[in-house]
Image 1 (cartoon, one colour):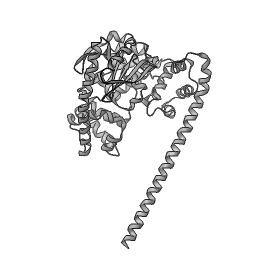
Image 2 (cartoon, rainbow, N blue to C red):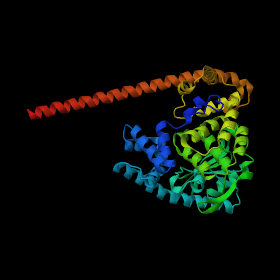
Image 3 (cartoon, rainbow, N blue to C red):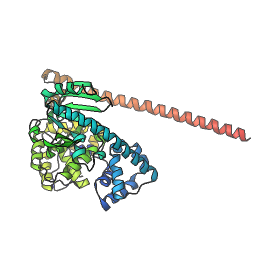
Image 4 (cartoon, rainbow, N blue to C red):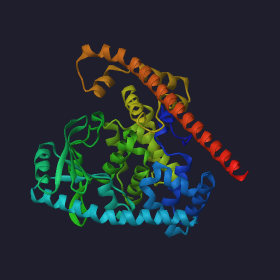
Length: 424
């Protein structure tokens, strides 16, 4: 990743832990490209799956949510695959097709009820993107319905939805605003938020997105979604810190937003990213999309974004590292290993042990200065404790594995002896 003509953003190498692997990138190309380009990516991906395509598709959690998209590529581009794997993908697609009908019906009921109560709402993430940028809603699995509301409407919306087969399972303040988690009688979750990002540091430009919202149809009823530039910022910003980004859905979401909106306001995106303190992770993500997946990101925009990211403040860098720690490969060791400069490694170590007071106040949501010394003492102790606990857990699991292996070998020896005795 990277273009030598662009300024190198601080810590961009370390933050690459949030990006897909080489194998995942090839699979994404096969899904997003067309014709010979898709077939070539598929062929290369299959050559790199040593355990076989079926084992990879069944066991790899990162691809689980994009199985319908893979099956669609299989049909559209004539990709070659063994019969067992093809059957598995077809079953996943048909299952998602049936689920999508139920999902859209519930979503339609929710939106109609909110409109009847005159509650302003913006449909977020997969619920909105499946209907507006994907070729078919079936191709975008949505685990839940997510809706952005104004803070003063949250209680009324939750109370209203409780009357139609929903129950409240969680409520209260969250770092990025207030929220309610409700569950439908079918066990489908419904998330009501008053903040766009869970990290409050990123919510600086929240108010103005309501004036830019777009009208469209979601689940065949009138609704509002984010403007394209806000949608792209939301997808990339959320991907930078969400533990859900081990799923590859966010890559497809961002790619389709760019592909379906050739008139996307890149200047507005850069301005909002700067005011939301997201230029650094956005630079890493959009550079990957442009260079590895041929997303139509203007080169001039990428250059300006990378330049802005290279001038990001120390606090913005700390929050970017905080976000990267949520990635499956975002361990402290991985961040150090990925960082190519000694200055960068020194920054990572200092952040892990002695982060800035500003960063700590935001993360801990505690503005009492007298507590800060206790946090500084607690962080290294906590890290060492986690490392010891992790090492102990690995040792216990290793011992259990060896015991099971010895027991299995012993049973096999007994079986062989008995068979030999029977032969005699």
